[in-house]
Image (cartoon, rainbow, N blue to C red; front, top):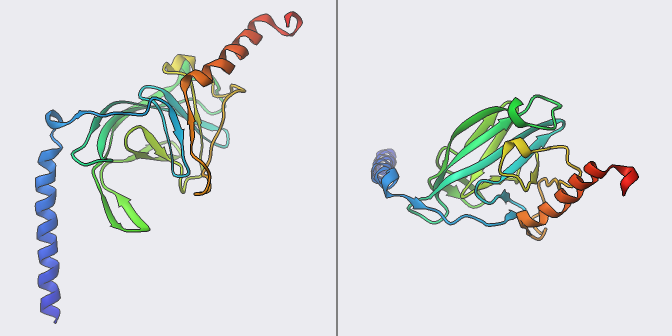
Length: 208
């Protein structure tokens, strides 16, 4: 009986090794194509997704980082792929990121899953670690909300120089109930309050 289980285990390990070897060939960059990514921000109970190139803010307490995904490539299986990212890490207490931000760039990926429901885990290089933040990437341009202590805010900005993490119109989301409805927010919707706040700053209270 013991020998039988050893042989079965060895067989499974061999199959896993062969699967990895064959799978690696499918992930050659020249074989991957541009992925279809959301054109709007999407907030579900499990994750928050951004249009490619748009900035997501993440905060815990007073600490804030900004994340942007770009160069997204579709993997060989649905729900898998690779993306480049940039993380902007402002000094603590700084609202305007701009030139003061430290930048971390890299590549993240989801290359499949293992386990059985409800314990299913991603395969790939999907963790983004900067300062106290451990952010988990989800294909194609998403960060996981589920099981995290952080708050997330969609923004209308694609340039880090424009970011104001203290803007009053920002909507912050945290982990939600599985029964909560999903939300769709277009960048255009975010631009309307942005223009109003900007105009208010220009005119001042006496001119309104």
